[in-house]
Length: 143
Image 1 (spheres, helix red, strand yellow):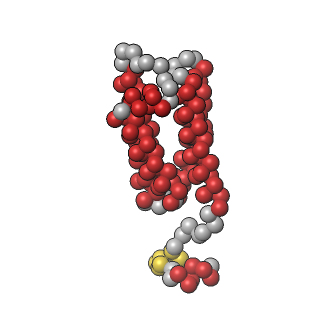
Image 2: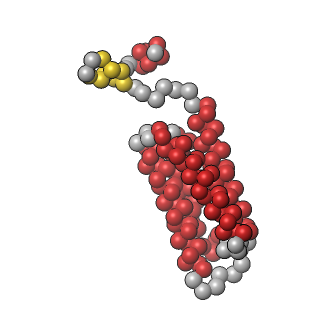
Image 3: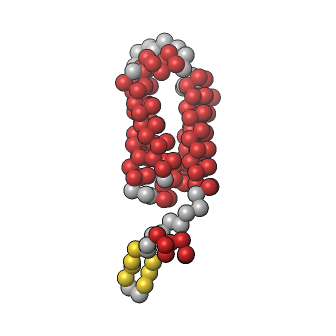
């Protein structure tokens, strides 16, 4: 869950910088000049991405184990195809598509790596009759 927390923290602040200064994104991603309301739409998209980072931080803080696999699922199944489709129908620029695509794939790989190599037991409780008691550190290792 630490990986999800730190990925979410990075995502929150990384995209928040682009919300505050969309011209920074324009410079770094070498986007075309902004015309009309495009600067507002781009800032809105970056705000949505930063809110997703906030969700990661909150769910990792509450040790929501199923959220880690859900985070990878929505990135791979929803976000990546949407970015590709938006690029193919000329709604976003190539550099922006590559940056978003690369970010989603990179974050998915990091989270999947930590999920795969995390072999710790999830439960810290043991049932004894109708009551549940916390296990001591020595008891957890024996189970």
